[in-house]
Image 1 (cartoon, rainbow, N blue to C red):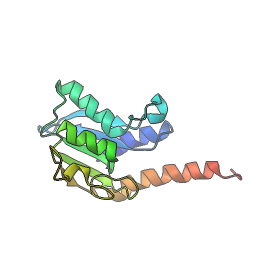
Image 2 (cartoon, rainbow, N blue to C red):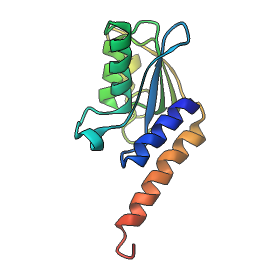
Image 3 (tube, one colour):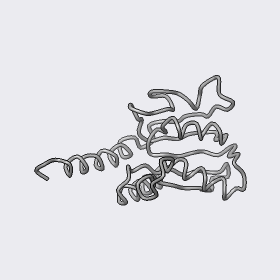
Image 4 (cartoon, rainbow, N blue to C red):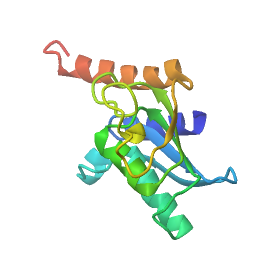
Length: 150
């Protein structure tokens, strides 16, 4: 998770919401990593999870990421949770829960929906305070910049 936090900080430094993600193969090897690139690339699907899943699929030569674990600093949104289901990721390890858009148990539970063709295990709250603090600092700074007094 600390590696994912470092990736999140890269996103924040580039002006994007600081979320970082990595995909770990069953062997323990990191096979994909990503951070939010929506602003940098003008891509609405440029979420850290999608970037990391794409990198892992390229590296492994298959879209099926069976047995892999997605480690992410913030609970995935519905789009990213859908990508987890469709890529057959076995487990999602997340840092901070997202009470607004979370889709791994907070608002929705897309990855464990009994109607889904695949379900992933969810391990939440890993380094939750540290992961949440990265996002809080980012938004506090952006809110301060938006105030009329500077």
